[in-house]
Length: 358
Image (tube, rainbow, N blue to C red; front, side, top):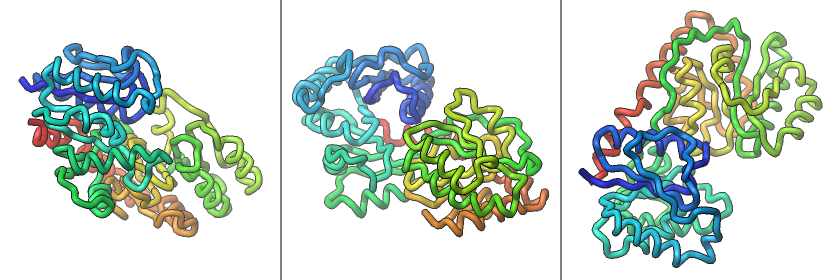
């Protein structure tokens, strides 16, 4: 059976990237592929549960400077894939292709770059741009999370030789037995309290929405560097009584079950896992149509509403539109949400992966 290795930063981490890597790896292992996961650093205590047959390895036992150890990292990756006779290497995050492209040179190994970021975002790291260019030229496949991101790759890089294929992340969330209701009069928002997530835009819009629906509230779950600033904004706009800052929460179930809608105001995304989680509870969504992801998940006016990115008036109108739905309209939209959620279950996503793993 084919030997597949996933190369990831650190499997100990608890983020969305580690979660979906675990989902795909487990599904492949259950189909009798020999699966291993190689962390660049540590990774000896995976946060998410792995199928027992999956073996984990570490390139380095602890965090190091990869800038200073570039050639050492390349050599170690090459040594690992040859010693373990890897057939397919899946590189989780394009930036790591700066190591794997030279490491796999001349080897008969299927090389897949799995991009988890919006192409227009490099988070200030120029090596991510280099990694993307090398992946486009030297990898066999580049897997993007959305069709839109595939287009951005094709527009942003010349002389692409890799085959670029959009494969959505699978949802780790099973469809829940939940009966969302307008009676909860609650709009749920989840995410890190950072500039990217756009909670400042949400609060600005809510200041006007709350005047028309004083019995409704927003619940914001998450923590981050902007928390104090956002709390002060709520006071300045005099909406602190209708905005609940719930902090970071491990168990989100109760929050989803007591919400009427979900709202996402991000300035940019990859494929927002939080939208998939909200859909698993049948919650209609209003979200900025930012690059990338929301338009892949939300069918406008079918299972939610898409708003022009950064458009405060558009957000105000969309929030009020959902709040003022009739019960029949609301129940129909919620039903559509659940139907859409099934598209992101693990099995159909894994079938797409199997088409490129050779």
